[in-house]
Amino acid sequence: MEDQSLVATIILPISLIVIMLSLGLGLTPADFRRVILYPRGVAIGLGNLLLISPLLAFAMAELFGLPAALAVGIVLLGASPGGAMANMLTHLARGDVALSVTMTAISSVAAVITVPVFLGLAVSHFGSGVESDPEMLSIVARVFVITLIPLGLGMLLRARRTEWVIENYDRARRAALGFFFVAVIVAIAVEYERVLDNFTDVAAATIALNLIAMTISFTVAKFARLNDRQATAISMELGIHNATLAIAVASTISIELAIPAAVYSSFMFISAGTLARIMHRRNAAASLQEPALATSPSPS
View 1 (cartoon, rainbow, N blue to C red):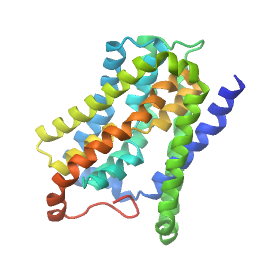
View 2: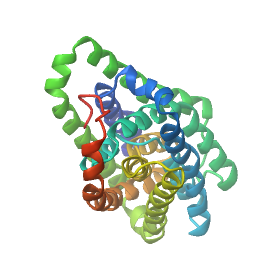
View 3: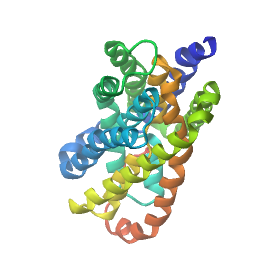
View 4: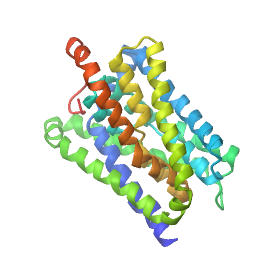
């Protein structure tokens, strides 16, 4: 219990704060205004991310018959916003980085509402599977403190010290990636035996969620007549969630709820990296013809 308390109160929150601060360093107000300038792409992307993804997570929990705690954990993962690594992989795939950055920014802010809402729905539907149900107000407060405050501080630092941020952004991004892996390793280590006991079902459910979400989001984007670069960005955003947020929130209830996010993190870069490689050449011609909309120093 002491190990779990240390993880929940110190290690995971610090990891997420570093990650969100790094994300904020790559954002400007223009990334939020882009929702007005390019409403269709942003609306479709966020619709996939904020609605389709958590609903698919519910479906995967039911389909694979996950125990209550793991079912709630996979819904929490599905409701989590896109991650900064999605921006990097979108760049590698020559997708629309500006759209990716905008979706990450807005979904990260919206997480203060969406994460507690879907977490509450999952607990109501599956039960929490732990001794005490989470208090939603405390979850809202925690998500706000460990996501929006460091995100805002990062944006403020970029606005005040732009040149310094540009010079050091790559270091900050590498630090964020390191803290991400720390969060995943810690979550697995603390619940190592339970991870092994449920690995097959959880791995199958999370891999299915990852692949189906990326496929549906890409297909929806193409049906909406978005170009390949935009569809790539949307699909990446559905493939690379901010799993650290899911793990950090889960650990405040029970570290067992963090297992799906930790297992998901072990696979998501494989599928998303494969898509990036496939789309790289396909998007190359389009990227030469369309103006670059991404804002430095975001990964563009």
